[in-house]
Length: 320
View 1 (cartoon, rainbow, N blue to C red):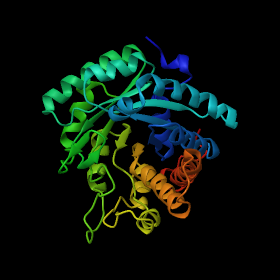
View 2 (cartoon, one colour; view 1 turned 90 degrees about the horizontal axis):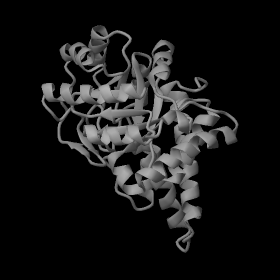
View 3 (cartoon, helix red, strand yellow; view 1 turned 90 degrees about the vertical axis):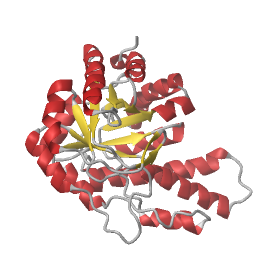
View 4 (spheres, rainbow, N blue to C red; view 1 turned 120 degrees about the vertical axis):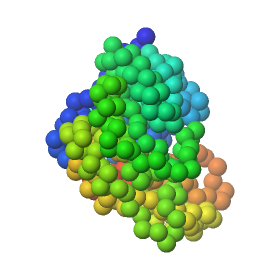
């Protein structure tokens, strides 16, 4: 059993309380490799932002759970080396079983998500409560989910939205004891969130109703990439096919972050930024084969994107 405190990490409880009161959201960025983690920590140190570094089930399989834990421990030291000890949470994104959540808690994660949204309401309550009881014994925070997001991300996929029902949230929070709640209000996983020609909007009205039911309770938005069209243009220019990629307008995310939404997950935007930079290097320097020469620019592009998110979208700049 490894405590996250031994790794210099923090859980999300105090961070969420500050975010709700301060009207901003904590960035939650996924990582699978060194360059992604470097970019996240550099961006958050430079903007003095707290951060949640997320690991999906797919990332654990791809990068190895032991390596990822040591990378997270290294991120704490790296932030100090860069000149500012920002609060860092290591979070399991979309845990689909008690066993997976327990494994992460036992190996140093400071926060876990148990996603029982694909189950019946009663089954979701049961598995979430089980994870909460174990996690809280180790001072680890837990995120639950009500409602289903459409789209595909790693091993999580669904064809259609099921909006969170405001009338269920109070009962779910009370019965499970979760520390935060992921809701479905029209965000979705992946880069193709809306059909071309449609008006990309999220249901801020549902968010308002949920806030009335559980005032001040930490709310989480998944699938919140904005799919910046300047990045899509670069990918298309250098041979990619992303013409129909449309995301969540950033002004809507900023409006949500001024409410009880205190954690916003962004992954696809980061993938797009790195892909655009790599495609550009390969097109302009077709003889390049040193990974540092294309992963370095990809890391730098990701850092600049995440600095923008912290400052202009989430409002987390200077909150560390």
